Length: 73
Image (cartoon, rainbow, N blue to C red; front, side, top):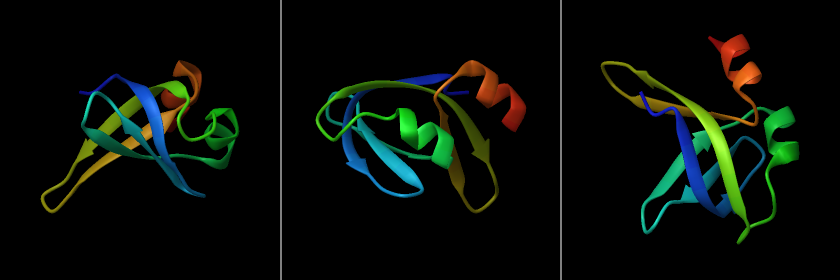
């Protein structure tokens, strides 16, 4: 599992963010609550995460806190 993603906010949209971690951009789906805690593009961020593996897709979800991630699970 990918437990945490840290880096620089590269993209910030209504339902996801992209975090640049040294040249690799991870797209994390986020809730509106988490998005309120995500800083502006270009700023550093740390998001707790959960990876869901399906036959046809990988889905990475980002959370502002471990508690929010645990509620998701």
